[in-house]
Amino acid sequence: MPDPTRRERLLGVLKKVTTAQLPADDGESLFESGLLDSFALPDLVSALEEEFAMKVPDRDLNPRKFDSIARIEAYLDEHAS
Amino acid sequence: MPAYIQCFGMHAPARVVTNEEIGARVGKVPEWIESATGIKERRWAAAETTVAALATEAARDCLRNANAEASSLGMIIVASGSAARGFPGPAAEVAAALGLEATPGIDVPMASAGSLFGLVIASRMVESVGDVLVIGAEKMSALIEGAPLDPNTAILFGDGAGAALVTARVGRWEIVDAVLHTDGQFRGDLAWDGASALKMNGLSVIMQAARKIPGAIAEVLARQSVAAADVQAFLLHQANQNLLVRVAKGLGVGPEKIFSNVARYGNTSSASMLIAAAEWAAGNPPAGDVVFGAFGAGFNWGAVLARSR
Image (spheres, rainbow over the protein chains, first blue to last red):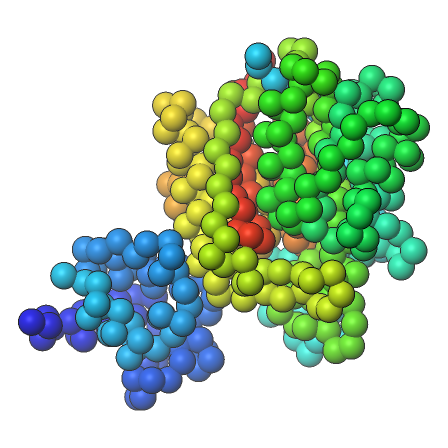
């Protein structure tokens, strides 16, 4: 059963690593939109690991997996407890 | 048998390429380049200068610093990802330039982590072959020059060479322990095919490097029960100042512990760690532990713990 607060927690994580306005479209690239720069990506992954008490393995450190809110939600659906 | 680093050497080409110059060519303002990379300028070699020529200059500098003759060497190792020729690699040309006619020369064509791997190979070889000169040399400008320049790589890279003399005789730092790793899953994310422009998936490189560099350092420190805070200095591959800051954060130490000269040389790939070591050693007497670390194409990465004697 998905955590009903997961989306709010995810948006909270994104607001921790950027001060920019979150995109209205969940599919919009966080990097191409300028919301995150390349060095915010490791911070985003670390913050996700902390918030969702999970470990993102090195093989999953693929920018495409964290490129948009929709993709991060999909990753969390699969991996977060 | 223990292995020791006697001293370092380096060479940087004379031509300075400023952010103003490169920014004008790739459509980026100098201030943005500096904030994104920490780089203010880099050195580019002349068109006719080869990787081997850069390597030879660094080798001679290191031998001068060691008060040693090339004839005393039992082996040379040349790390470079930017050598223009597939084979023979630059080690043979460097050996010839140093006047060596039968001394083995090994090429390590793995780019940014090459000099770190070379250092570890040397530490295992000194017992059998004698003194080993490890050189990292790169002409990265040759990989990015072309029309049009790729802004993502053109702003980063520079040319240069660094060297370290490793011996079985007691020297300034004993190589205490080392960890080396390779993960080929991401081999396409940072690659050069020898003909076309360098390809780099910057996001992937940063994601992996930001975890793997502090991870390898933590691994070697834990094995030797050394706290990161007690290390005199971290002498790392100089990829990007923002990455170095994140490595410091990952290790739980202040950024001042991470020696940085990336502002003046840019990312010189395999040369950068030894250039950093040479500059650091020139201004800092040995006083405890130093850690070397690098990450690069492959991905290959690792760390070396060395202790002053």
